[in-house]
Length: 224
Image 1 (cartoon, rainbow, N blue to C red):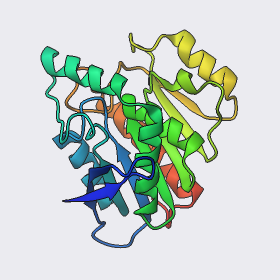
Image 2 (cartoon, one colour; image 1 turned 90 degrees about the vertical axis):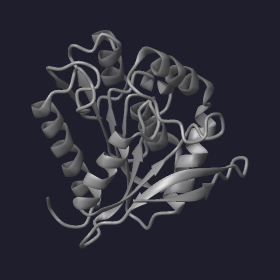
Image 3 (cartoon, one colour; image 1 turned 30 degrees about the horizontal axis):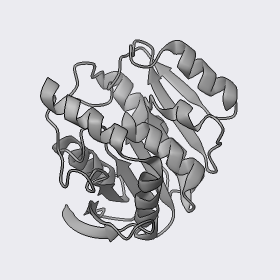
Image 4 (cartoon, helix red, strand yellow; image 1 turned 45 degrees about the vertical axis):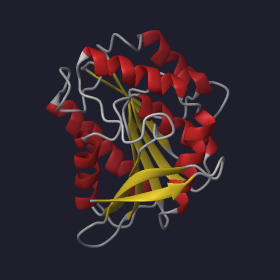
């Protein structure tokens, strides 16, 4: 996996992104959107795993304006700093950076994100031209885009035991967007990451399968 520099169309800011090319036939491009923790080894490993499935992946470092190369550990101090950075990063900056990623990948281009990145993937589906589909994992901040509708096929994944995202919030998202599949898993927040205490291997596999099926149906080349 190689790091490169992309330029935002919003302010000309140059940020890092990690690209991984597939070893065989290419199904499409995939933007792998970080959790609040930044582009960690877990995100890079996840991007590499999707590359093995045939996707050319880009994992952008979306906090680079404020903390270049930020990678948090899972301790209290780093989590606090990660939360600060996520709250200090405006969505218009994120949208412009993700648009630069779309421009850097040949179509079709998909997006997948987790936690803060799950909300970013939803936002990109609403605001960023050129996306073919988006898969959004436990995006607590998705309600911030209640008045917007994704412009490409989109799915969302939530954990039934996620204390940070009440069931009422998930229900409200479903009521506002009845045509968007929302999958509920018997799991907590972060269930798709083997670095998290709430990791659930079965739920993670099922959510990943649904993500891959979405991409295939939406225009990814070849069947999984």
